[in-house]
Length: 279
Image (cartoon, rainbow, N blue to C red; front, side, top):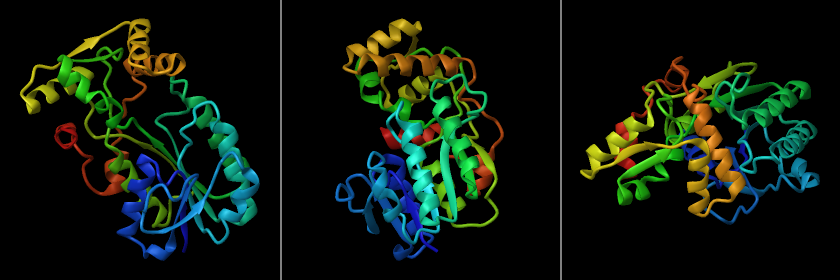
């Protein structure tokens, strides 16, 4: 069996490759990436550019299972994913696993639309598939760790919203398990941490472990977007991130099904462990 992973040089992709190498011979793993020479993953690599669709079927030759990690280019995802799915069908790929968004069918996040469109494409393609609806990555918030320590504040627009966030390594392990075991085709998994937390909880954990005062400062959506733009983010992305925080305040990133921990056969990584690693 040969398994290929798109976006293999990305943050999630590299972790999936590492998890697969613990379960499969290296010769059965193919890393697909726009710039395959970017990272040495210890497995076969093939060039795979979503925006050059005529080359994709050739890159998927001999692949049995494909992990389609959602594109990082929000706004272009639907077209890029369609090109991959069509190429997989043409190449005779037997099964696709796709990383979608937690509760994509009812999520208020703007990200949901392209994920739902991709899920519909997979259904229409007639290829057996599994949907991994990943919750938020804890790293999405820990990217602001240095600034929080420097200024004594973690900022956002989540309010008291609870986030069932887990580190990428937990989601990567789930993907590797689904790719290397049977019985998952046709299923949709809502994946999230066992433990839900607020940004105030996160700030308190950072303070406790670092020994420095850090508090959560909740901002109105427009003010938070403006602050992010002031840090150098493009205005459109800053506005989107702020809107996702507002969605989180409405419960978009909360899930208490414990599906992720059941799938990986252990409790999800705690917030305390993730903060410790980040520090």
